[in-house]
Length: 243
Image (cartoon, rainbow, N blue to C red; front, side, top):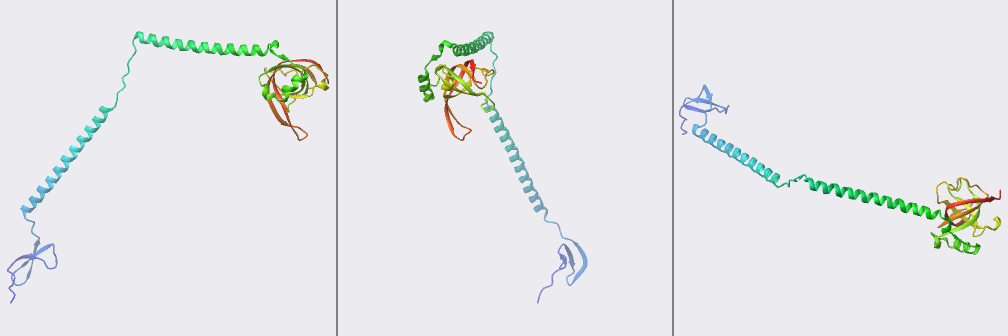
């Protein structure tokens, strides 16, 4: 035979969040909230929570100090450039060196200008150009690339001086001042001096002081291709016309 529970407060069989009074035979209408936990257990839990919080705070502070220490260490390891103001003697030496460099630059510019002037003077010196006969000029025109830079006096008839040739002109040339119909070396002439062809027109008979620059090939109006010697003309003098 089962022994009845003694009177007292027990968990309500219908509502677990409250307690109901058992009178030894049946449940009564008396209820109450569940009894709070043992005060000792609560104190123990609170102590644990406090300890955990203290540990977290201490660790955070220690970490912050380490970061500051590392930052300070990094900053202390950055090299600091020291700017030193030169004294009077050093300033004088610097100024002297700068003036010497400027003087060297001016001297180089003067030397370059003098060399350019000397080259132009040489190009305008008629006596520095070689006179040749018809055969000699034919040999030069046969292999003009082998005679680049050589200076000659030649004669010719201007056969083209228009927009088709641009700044250049085409001249039938010879080493001698022969009849124009005997001038049969097709030559492409460029201005060795700016504007030198300003007064030259087609059919002019001219004396030219030239420097051989090589050869060029171009297409003709008949659909063919022609290779001709090229020259820079540094002086040109008309002496007649066939027009």
